Image 1 (cartoon, rainbow, N blue to C red):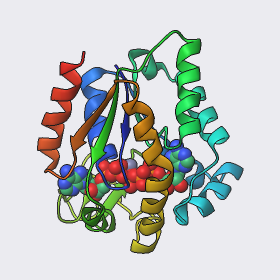
Image 2 (cartoon, rainbow, N blue to C red; image 1 turned 90 degrees about the horizontal axis):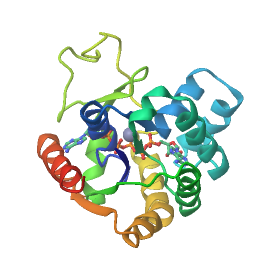
Image 3 (cartoon, rainbow, N blue to C red; image 1 turned 180 degrees about the vertical axis):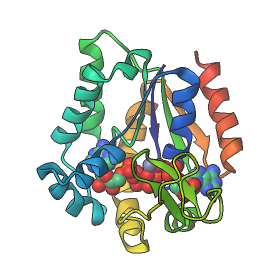
Image 4 (cartoon, protein in one colour; image 1 turned 30 degrees about the horizontal axis):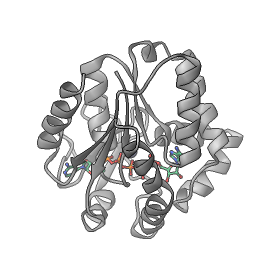
Length: 217
Ligand code: AP5
Ligand code: ZN
């Protein structure tokens, strides 16, 4: 399968993508997770990216397109297809992805938009807890870990993302509406776009996701 997930911060991209990965035996490429791993390693890119991410801005298109290209070329899991989470989030990134696929004679199957009202996102974002190494996310109220502040799988500590505060969220939402909404229109013109109600509980969102994806196979 080759698909992308588009949606505002907190829509549930990172919650649904690992399930899709499992179901379809493909790779899950989350550009935010990839950047956070650079930040953790304190690479030059990580140092630059941290400043941008903490303010809710976007890292440059060239860097992001290069990152995805590198993964699609070298990540063996991507041989079975891919779920892109957080990319493309600008029109130039969408064009970059199209060019990459064209070179490989491949097409995209689904561009799924997780639709949700901004007002529901504050609580989701400020209550989120993440396991940095795997990218797994939890929520203090909606999806609590089995043991407080510990990852269910590894038992390692959970943290709060440094951009998960109300102030950075407002900026991320503004950037989403300005720069990423045009990506939705870009795919609406292609016929592979599908909208999904992302305000329902995660299990219901997953059911509807499968329906969309399997109907279009
Ligand atoms: P990124 O990591 O992609 O952040 P984001 O787009 O803001 O999205 P989130 O991860 O916040 O939301 P999500 O949809 O994954 O939500 P989740 O499933 O975790 O990017 C971070 C930064 O990196 C960007 O701001 C930018 O600076 C940079 N960047 C990344 N990609 C880039 C690119 N391509 N170009 C340029 N810059 C880039 O869910 C959120 C919470 O809600 C969790 O606690 C979860 O448990 C809970 N939850 C999920 N679903 C439900 C539900 N149905 N009901 C109730 N609670 C739910
Ligand atoms: Zn995410």
